[in-house]
Image (cartoon, rainbow, N blue to C red; front, top):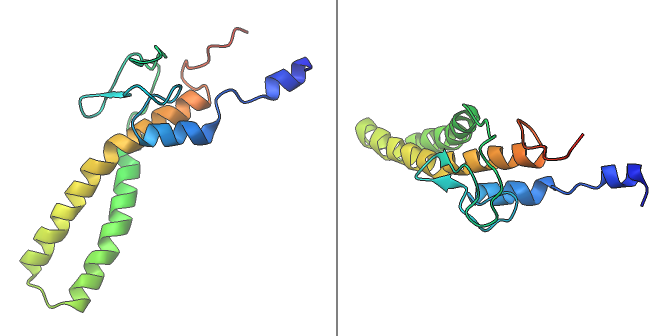
Length: 131
């Protein structure tokens, strides 16, 4: 294999890394838990030792969570409002609860996905190749 062929081999494929991140697992091995507590990314994977301290997810997970939850919940709420004659307070309570639950479910998964994307694309110090 020539040098240019070696450089074109993707040793960190994006798709498996994203799926591992969505499961909140280490993007490198898929075994160790990436998150400690709820949203705190571990400094290193407990299984393979991959250094995860370089991640810079910042506000990305929150923006993705808002985008997805509001695009899902708002049309459902409007449809329910026209389909059933619910009291507005009941409608608000049900859909606000659903919105909070969906947000709490998605937020750590989106954080894992963004960290896995950064790892796969060698962003923010995840590049371990010597230049």
